[in-house]
Length: 517
Image (cartoon, rainbow, N blue to C red; front, side, top):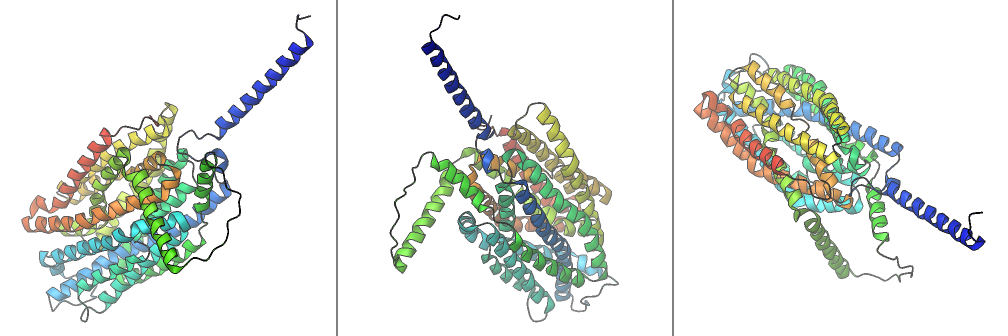
């Protein structure tokens, strides 16, 4: 009827079936191809149950460690001030809660306190700089969990040594606190623990969802801060030593809980094997088992280390896109120091507040930052998604806006003449709370998945290097501001605002790689 022979009809049917097969293969490949070039294939995305388990246990660890930090940090500062005041004024009574000794707020005491704190931060960065990249290699070879545990264990040893120094002020100098930083050779310190937490959650989260997960991580920490900060202020009014001991106990529990975390390294290994399977034919020939001498084992270990360092250099440090973002993040690290380490002392000195009052005020910024992370940023991201922005374009836009709020809030804190204006400045600064998760999300999408551990390790190392230099610089600026008096007491925040402006300029100058644009 159609004028075709039976052979022609059969040929057409075979061509149709072949075309259908090709379409099916193409369709399957498209479904398994990640929307973002460096994302995991669809079939390797972990099950929701594993992601939930990581979230629950990881959230518990973050909560315990976060509460411990919030309770211990202001308590340590107040006890250090008390000990220094005793060293300066022999008639000062240690551990006397009332009436407060006004001499302890004088420049003689505060300048020593700021310098001890600053040098402690610098010393805290020296050892991690030396060991963080090796620990990052360990994390990519043997697992993230053990590195997180060791990092927190080292932090706990550091705090215990500080307690020993403060408990025996007549036998140990306040400067002996600095020796405790040697404990960070175990694990690489708190920045390494944070880097591995980001790596852990990146392993189990598709690239398009990482920004929201990082929001949630930072929001969880803000919730902890909102709850724990008033508790810390209350305990400071009772006895700072009580707050300190509760804090060290919770830190110990959090450190132990990290051993319950599921290991996620195998997910990255599976992705690497699948990626290389297309190009490399596996050798099925059984390998002979030979004995390896100690000298040969050492040579292999050194060769492996050289290869791993070359891997970091090749994939991360030679990329102008990654290094520009690294520089922008490094420039705002001093901002983190002056708001987390120096803000309580700055407010207590400038506005003549007690440590407990200053601690209560800080909780206001945490409350608004929580709203930004839980409501403002997700809602803005949803609007940008509806307008067709890619995850990278969306995150880059939000990072730029966050940098502007960081600059505005910091410069207002620097020049705030009265307490209520400083509170307003802190509220404005809280709108920059998404910068860190946005920054890490952008970088985690740009880099190859198998370099995730190395990426976060390099970030931690860069931050430690910046902290090594900026901590004493900020302390000197604070001391100089105390000497000059008046508006100049905000000198460290003026300098931090300048660095933030430079970082914002870099973020606005950044352009997405062509692969992602």
